[in-house]
Image: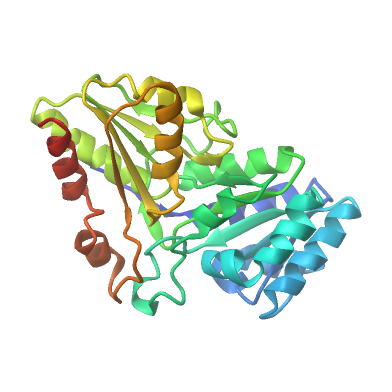
Length: 312
């Protein structure tokens, strides 16, 4: 279905280089991961880049101080390290203090499958959603990443942007999504039978599943829920009007993620049948990401099977 793939962190690198030329507030920090996330920025803007080494807690503290001095710091490392190693600093130095810091978290979900649970960002969405005052975004592709970073720069406060790893399918033809808004889902398909609400790199899988279901005369709506917090409750309630129910799709632990958030909204407003596709509450086996998605029933065919279960 998708003819093109692009790397999400390349969007961050490209955009920061462009913006930093005119916006003197832009800085970037890395916990020894610049070569994998923002290599061009680190090389070309040495006066705007700080390598903090393997000291994520210190990186957050430094960024908070720079933000209080009028800068807009972008901090970069893996999702698993942000969500676990320096969570106290994110909660207290950034969210509680309302520091204008932007977190670029690479490798969320099962994309580091070959490195095992120590490097897989299995529960970062669940954790970050629970932090008061922290905006949480998981863009679906390169274009949503460009738009998310631009929106984050305009937003005055801490933002967590969760990305995949490697090349992901290109969903949008345009480089920037003009109507992208924090807290506002994007409806990518219109259908009456079932609604699929997906986030991050799983949106592409949801779209492919929707196309397969269409061939079987099953009409499916697809939403890109790029913002996990604040959540677009209006879009969820619209989705709840589907004839047979909702499927949520996320590359995150099933506990505390998108599925539970959608269930909470519908249960309080318009109870509907929901099936959630996510990482089961277990430490995954080691393997290639595509193999893990299939093993844990998070692949395209599993979404199709889940839709057929809703119909019966």
